[in-house]
Image (cartoon, rainbow, N blue to C red):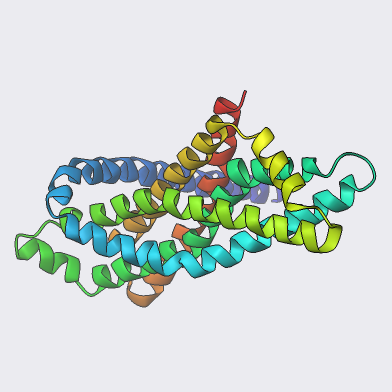
Length: 266
């Protein structure tokens, strides 16, 4: 009997694993087809660019305050830790160097994307999911309107455009926040701090940071649109889709950031 029970448990485990794998690959193939439709509708969306501009305001302009707050904290924490660790060991200009490069290449692109994944990605998914479960998306199709053209692709374009812009703001604010903390608490002068920032600055590092931000913008919008578009089962389904959007977005941001750093920073 014990052997039979073990075999049954193994059978149930294998069946559950198989269902999970099938469900995972079904989502992957459906997501790829969905993304293909998004990119196919980019030319049509560009002809109605006002819809993209509206989303750029929603995604970008309204997110500036929270991005600034996160960036100031990032630069301040980096500067404090570096100044504390480097004290009496190496010249303080290396604080500016470390803060400038770290916020430019890694911290500001990732933290800006994380903030928007929670703020914009969840909002975008819940909005589209509500439209799906209340049959508003079906109404678009009945009226002969393409949801990809008017609802989905503009969100993707706006996110891809605004993430690098917000990242530039984040980098600037992060460096300024780092200087203020280093100056107030470790008496690092303006000249010394920014001498370190300028001496070790490379255009390639800024390009890599903005390229990461563009990729993160794609992740946030594509997942939000995908999970929102295929939402079902009413309010419960909206909650599940929103959770899936945030989890998938943040996971992809972390993995994508590492992969790009590995490929481009050699």
